[in-house]
Length: 94
Image (cartoon, rainbow, N blue to C red; front, side, top):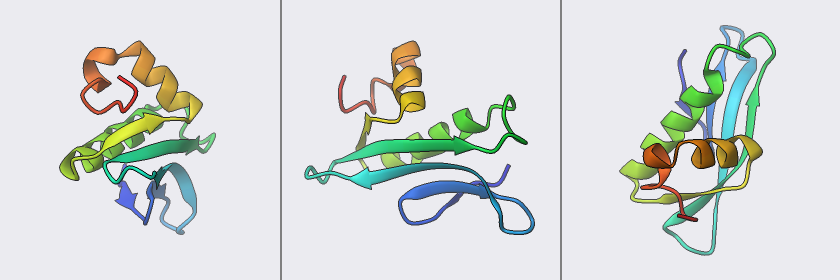
């Protein structure tokens, strides 16, 4: 699964350029924090771990930029709550 950063999103597209999965984020008043505000996975990819791969890539990108993530998207909130040992280092709410 090829993930590409497009502005404030991590995106996976099929060979025709159709967006099949994405996680979006936006800056906040704090330059060291972004808000993860939306995750989408096409029905053709659901159940294959695509959302987790998107989140892992977002975490890697923000870690490289020394930024934390404030979870707003329900999927990101759920994952941050379920796996604090994995995400507390990047969770702006922790």
